Image (cartoon, rainbow over all chains, first blue to last red):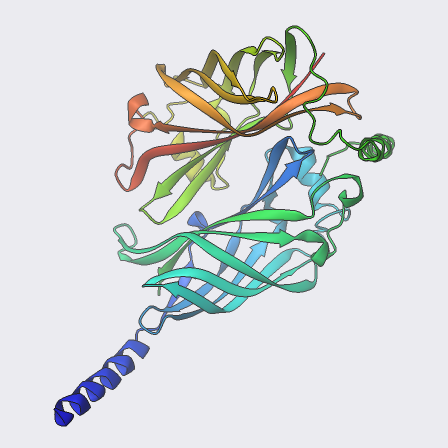
Length: 191
Length: 205
């Protein structure tokens, strides 16, 4: 019995060593990775915008349930569907994309629910200011993509961003909300 | 997050918004119900549809269509409404030009043959406060008409101090199966279920 327990322990150690070796790097697929935001408009409807260019890498160890990521969003790629709106938000009154052409998200704490990523805790640098942010998964899945013939992992994540924490205070004093909702589609291809 | 084209206009906007904020009770407004039918002009800056469809059971593809134009009549006292929307499908825009081009092909949105979709509705449901709760009508996409229900996630009317007019609008959700309209490319890897998220604001005369 003792011998069997020892064997089991050794097997478990062996397994976790093998599992540790399962850490893999994934490259963000820019054609399936978009960060969008939503903000209330006079308590009536929701204004939306999207950043069209995102790049970066993710490491994922599904066995050890760990991960990290380093993602850059090109803030000059903002697109709201209304040219004047996009221009105004990009101006120095708001995102000031000329001075801050990128936003940067880094994270090294991944929370798993079973074998799926449920939450990513990291820090977002926007307009030169860095604050913690938590991304919650609405969907997470890995699949073998028949086109690229590689494993692809990704999902839908959302987060709440308090824009005044980043110095983005335009309109706060006349009723535009401080809290914005981030809606993120992400897929990344195993390297 | 209001856009503005010139400095003087921007100053006026700010002044108006400050004035608006100084009048408590205006923000969550449904208060000033106008008697009789009102024809609202859809605000092209705040009237868009976004579609959402699941890609390989993993992440959600989104695309925006708009601005949507058309006629909206609301008679909130009589709890009635009439809505005719023209949806410019050719404007579909995902952030990825190759995907936009693919979406316009004959096996998806078929925009060469059907550049517009339509939504026509006369069945309006109102909540106790007089806000629009649900709009049921007929959606025509690729020349195929099917019943569609738009369910309000939010709805409000306000006196817009900048426009000096009543503005009513909200966020609406709808769900459809694209195969019912013949837009089947990519199934089942890209879901048949399409979720629509609609922002709409209409300006009273």
